[in-house]
Image 1 (cartoon, rainbow over the protein chains, first blue to last red):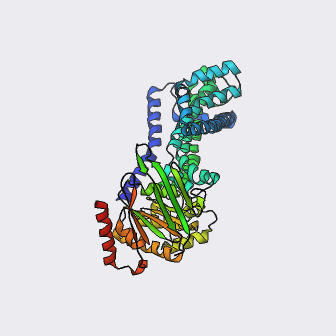
Image 2: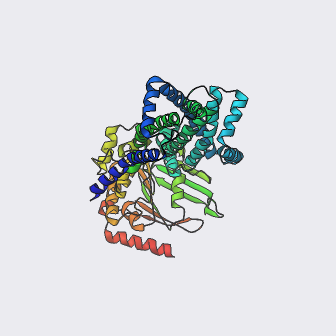
Image 3: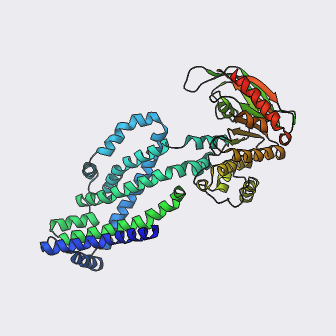
Length: 253
Length: 240
């Protein structure tokens, strides 16, 4: 019974994407306009862009920027969040900074960075990093606050060394928060890096989408969007989920 | 029983954490090397706090506690079995032991688990173990540091009587075979009367030693009737 239900759920989930493509195809046939291309046309465009144009180069460029900003934001955010979680005074002192960081519109940060630093690669990555860091810091702050005092007491009772305590007791407790910060951070970075590339860059998925927008080329826009989404989904299934399984597998026990 | 003093307690004053009033106001107590001392008394009297002070986990008091001649906290690590097993859920049973005692090899950790009747569970995560098994892993972990002092904070709380008997046998074996100095905190006088060489009843606020009962008969040979008699004595003292 349970097995049957599981099989059915699998097939329902597997049918989801083809159903979306069918609906899209049907809508395209009904509208029948060059500004509403059918999925087949978009896939043909992807093939063309991949073989004859710069699709892979653009994807690589965007992913590189996203990766640098991600690593920078995670590193800085974890350090800040750790400090805020440990020291109440610091937390109170910087509470409004974090609040502003969380709520300032991403586009404002990007524009400010471009004005102050010029339309450079550094300005773009810095803008993405600034946008993402407060989110990581807040998540890590909660993680540090949630550290089990019982385990700390255990380590003190047995005189466990600082590094051993960090490796075996503290870091494993923080990992769920690190992964949450990584996951929410990535979803944010994927989105804003494209917007910032539209605003000011000379390559990448966002830049190319900006060019297609100027030409009203919706097929090109959708081709780039689908390709980028494919990369994001592949990253989720090939990197994030196995990593999560490996690190947090004990929670399913 | 060896005659040296293992733990010497001289607390002039200890305040309640986050409350007014004194938890201890002049408490003196010596525990002999190799002795099994049980501290009994109502909940909130300060038994667990005293154990934490002996382990060097609570230093906010006026007085001196020395463990084997050194200030508490500066002596080598005691074996400490907390009320809850406090196993790290992301580590296997063996890894939990080695987490607090890196010098313990895998084989030694597995042997300790075997001593606790847990052969075959070396790689098991705590979430896969029953409550009683988790407590035995915690006991194995405490023994891994080869402690001269073993502190047991309510090791039988929230487990069924059958399991209590099993754990008592394990602790008795440890007391006979390894002969560490043991301080056992319990709210149940019966557990104390079965395991200890000496039972101390703490009561009042500030807490004071109300009675001190020595049990001369070896643990395994204790007459159940005598145990019940001691329990009744302690209960009547507690009520008084």
